Every structure is written in C-alpha cells, then in structure tokens.
Image (tube, rainbow, N blue to C red; front, side, top):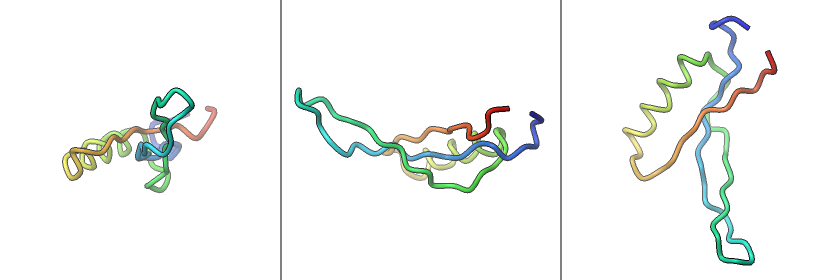
Length: 64
C-alpha cells in the first residue's frame, strides 16, 4: 500500500447503549469519504478542534 491510497475514514464515536451491568457501549459511525492516512489524521485533529466534547478515531478500510 502506498501513502496515496485512500483507505482511511474518519469515525465519530457515539455512546448508544448500556449493557446489563450499565457499562456504556460505543458505536462508531463513518463521517468521511475514504482518504489517505495523512488526510484522515488531519481531519481527526480538525474535527476534535471543532467538536471538543466528541470523540473521533480513524479506521483503515483496506487490507493492504
């Protein structure tokens, strides 16, 4: 895989449920189109600045 392959997406972490022990669960929703890892990291930083009370992560979609 090269650094220019668009295999990464920005994910928003959303607390959506509690289990039987009242521990919070977490679901991640894709909020960006595929991009390079460098672009995804920059988008994660920008999203965190714009929404400091929300958790974000990036996820790799390709196996390469």
